[in-house]
Image (tube, rainbow, N blue to C red):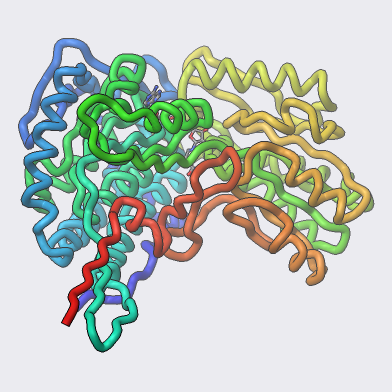
Amino acid sequence: MVVPYKHEPFTDFKDPAHREAFEKALQKVRSELGKEYPLVINGERIYTEDKLVSVNPADKEQVIGKVSKATKKHIDQAFAAANEAFKTWRRMSPEARANVLFKAAAITRRRKHEISAWLVYDAGKPWDQADADTAEGIDFLEYYGRQMLEIAKGEKVNSRPIEQNTLFYQPMGPGVTIPPWNFAFAIVCGTTVAPIVAGNPVLMKPSENTPVVAYKVVEILEEAGLPKGVLNFVPGDPAEIGDYLVDHKDTHFINFTGSRATGVRIYERAAKVQEGQTHLKRVIAEMGGKDTIIVDKDADLELAADAIVQSAFGFSGQKCSACSRVVVHEDVYDEVIEKTVQRTKTLTVGNPAEEDVYMGAVINQKQFDKIKSYIEIGKTEGTLVYGGQTDDSKGYFVYPTIFKDVDPKARIMQEEIFGPVVAFTKARDFDEMLEIANNTEYGLTGAVISNNREHLERARYEFHVGNLYFNRGCTAAIVGYQPFGGFKMSGTDSKAGGPDHLKLFMEAKTVSETY
Ligand code: NAD
């Protein structure tokens, strides 16, 4: 008997006992830094000469781990293992497959602070953000396990007296999972186990920025009893093996989360039928965002400022759901900016491996340079009201930055920055607010802060985003409560953590028998 799904609670770091436990976990992980990690193909550990080197973004000299790099030959081996494993894994009962996920959730829960501590080092996450990342991974395991049990019940279809009709879902075949670095445990775990619990072996190629945490996912699933060959761990240089994984004739699906540019590339390439390929590939591509918070004239402005700060600067704005544009009614514009600046002044920035800070460093030099250049662009497109400082002497630090009076069509209002930079613009009325909110090519998340019920109801249908929130921030969707995925160039709206998600990795089969 499986108990009903409930999301994993977050740790309260105000409690000294929790702080102490977390500091111990950080110490334990510190003692394990710098190790070498293998590829895992058909359960076998393979160490390569050439390695990905992961460093702490807040302390670039600190090596977190050295992870082996898969070549095309390894990818072929992994597909051979996955094809073989498919023969038995697809026949394993849905209950048995779900049980692997439930056990993995229990193992992760026991190792929760340790996994979060790895996220602090590998991804530069502040404590609360790391804790939420691990909790979300547990949620994916618990939720998708239960969803598989639901799907296994089959669907009702109509029958006539002369025949019996049945419809059920079966797995598709081996596929590829390509996650980003920003939820280095949760998204890696969710995008890997969704196809797996549905019966499909997976080749998982983690982000080159956070391969060590991804290896932990593999370890946990192995310990939970996942048979060899069902999950093959093939980290590597995306320029070397990315296209090869996508193009491979044995790839049945590509479960991608990452930037718009990579997602579009994968979508296009996957459409081409390769020699020897006997099926069409499915692409799940969840991509970037340019997410807006609207603040209405009749609104709780304290709540608005809290929501903006948390959504724009939590994990340094490195979330696809992060708020990077705010549209405020002209009557309350100055007040909302003032309250936002006041709160932003209290945010702490530092190395989360050393202290419990609000913000750490951004992920790498490339992102640091990109965000810095957008701050320069912002200075020409609007007025800098707060922040703007950057420092990459020890780690990749970008301080929270606020611009105002920015044209809605300006670059910092249109392009995904993926850093702690937020731009404000003013609007006359709710029509104009909605028009501005919808005028980007993205459609991922958004929020409306308003006490006007009529406006909220209009936004419900006219604010064109996959995840819309009223009177709260636009980040922090919970698995099973707020299924997640975007419209337009934000992706294929796969609604991760939602009731339809697993069917994306399955084919529906109808069987009809005449009596
Ligand atoms: P990215 O596109 O650079 O990389 C994502 C993954 O794709 C990585 O594993 C990378 O190695 C791989 N990759 C790169 N080139 C490839 C290629 N040619 N073929 C195959 N794989 C390739 O993105 P990122 O910097 O890791 O992540 C940040 C982006 O992810 C942001 O745009 C963010 O908005 C988005 N994101 C979206 C969601 C969502 O649910 N919509 C969630 C998290 C992050």
